[in-house]
Amino acid sequence: MKNILKLLGGCFVASAAAQQPLFIPDTLSGSTITLNMHADSVQFLLGIKTSTYAYNSYSYLGPTLILNNGANVSLVVNNQLADTSTVHWHGLHVAAINDGGPHTPILPGATWNPQFTVMNSAATYWYHPHTHMKTAEQAIKGADGMIIVRDNAEAALSLPRRYGVDDFPIIVQSVQFDSLNQLMPLGMQDSSLMVNGTMNPFVNLPSQVVRLRLLNASGERVMNFGFTANKSFYIIASDGGLMSAPILTTRVRLAPGERAEVLIDLIGMNGQVVNLMSYGSELPVGVQGGPTMAMPPGSPPMDSPLNGVDYNLLQINVAAQTLNPVTTIPSSLVPLNPWLESQANITRTIAMNAPSAMSMDGPFTFNNLSFDMMRIDYQIPLDNIEIWELTNQTMVAHPFHIHDVQFYLLDRDGNLPPLHERGKKDVVLIESNETVRFITKFEDFADTLTPYMFHCHILMHEDDGMMGQFLVVPATSGMNDVIVNDGFRLFPNPIKDKFSVQLLDKLDKVLILEIHNLLGEIVYSYNFKSNEIIDLDLSMLNAGTYIAKVKTEKNNFVQKIIKN
Image (cartoon, rainbow, N blue to C red; front, side, top):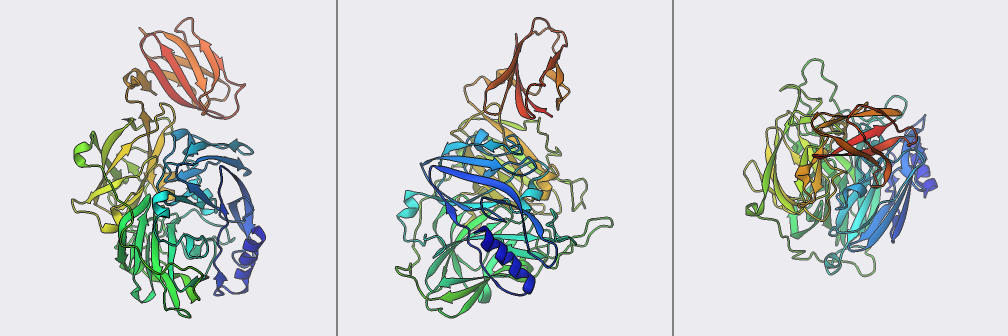
């Protein structure tokens, strides 16, 4: 398959307008799945090859993972890059230590082996890197792939589910190449489009009901999906699961990170052509992908030729029906059971901020705080039901993503969300000066050491610091007695070899220091005999992220440390 994708890349050289058959990634399933992340190259354009990242035998992107609800899975991730990376299972409900955020780095040549039970409902999810300050670079280079979760409720419905026959992954990216044909981790200068890593693609679909799993994997661009001639289609699933019933529409807007599953009825259209489009002309100013805004002097360029226009993403050639085709649209899907506002334990308010009222390039922040690996923004008791109220005080729209949970939107500026946003979600686009509220429950997993992330899914904003983190802690753990990153000094941090510990409360006494790796194993300990500042040596430890736990006569302290 690697050679096939490279051949497709070579075909692009013959003619920039030449159509290419849509690449359909193979699938991986089973109790053990191995992903080898590696560097490669593709001949996307005439001249110099484009350096890329990929998994397994591919030169760009990775295989589609098929997971079954309730199954136990072991994922073996081998980092064959020359750089540290991570793999985040976007949308999956897993323990923080298995989530693949920036606190679980995979060093070059190392292997990471998360193991978990699949707890999500049937839906479309995806995987991608999440290394702080390098997410955009690594994801845009191609280290991404789709995840499909199946469950019994979805299996009982008459839906297309034959992968690559009537059920298709549609991974859409907008990218920008520099003068040396290399992919750039930039935003609104993007001018090239790819679907499943294919430029100018076409696909032959049977004249029956077909399922398209839409994923906006762009770094910044919002896609306003629809079909030529305003052909209607049905939305059957949002980020985290099926809707209660199919929603008939002609458009679905997806920000970076968002997914939607749609059914298109092609019955009786054999021999006809339909294009999957993005109708950027219908997006408002301030939404990335809408009309280019007038920029203040000194602002970075945001002059993409894709801004505010309609463009083709995928040509669909309608072909003959398959055997046993799906020819009807179900009238109902699965029941949805959102939590009630009256059940909420707390409402958290988060403002999206910019350096100035007219700033278009940030750096953007949450509550005027830039991301800090050592700062825990929230400690959330296990089983808390919470309302998060998000207000965008910037000039641009931001897609907000939260790890660990799926949520239900309550309202947009006090109004009920549109029908297609009333299912389970993990990304929501918040426009300028808009306030969005959602409700969710933090259940199943608690960890006083490893946090989950929340962030803007515009990758460049995330890398610039538009990210926060939270711990889900046991409700009865006495967490009031565990103080995170407060009350003692461990310096310097990051550590090269030697470091010191100092307690700030002169009347308290340090008893023991423990250093844990990210698997929770104790890799170093020291029993204190006095409160004096003394030098300790960690030269025996490999470079990476660790947890320092300090027990005193009065408190227990926890702090994240980095060993260089």
